Amino acid sequence: MAKKSAIERNNKRKELVKKYAGRRERLKEIIANEDLPLEERFEARLKLAALPRNSAENRVRNRCEVTGRPRGFYRKLRMSRIALREMGNQGKVPGLVKSSW
Image 1 (spheres, rainbow, N blue to C red):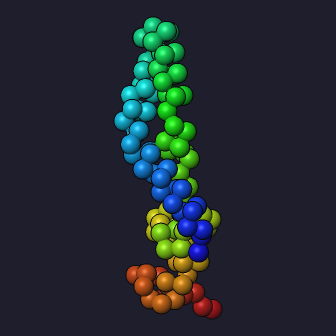
Image 2 (image 1 turned 120 degrees about the horizontal axis):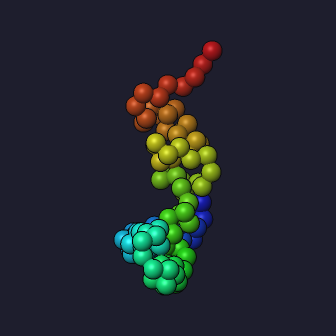
Image 3 (image 1 turned 90 degrees about the vertical axis):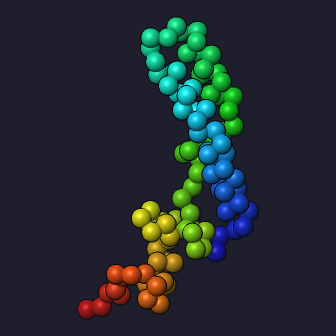
């Protein structure tokens, strides 16, 4: 089980990403639009830099929904390899069969 503080920190980052997503997208569109004057694009870049760092999507860490483990994460199932194996052995994951040979 991961530290509660690390899980909560990541959850706060997710909330910030949601809160600032629209504003970030608009500023990025202005920056990428080469038809606009250079000063306006530069001003948009400064506004983007002024936003909280944790509002950037790439600051969010993928964590297991069951244990909070940050590594060995399966995106499709949103859980770590260890939690997947345990739940698979218990028969809680449909279609997952324990390997044996």
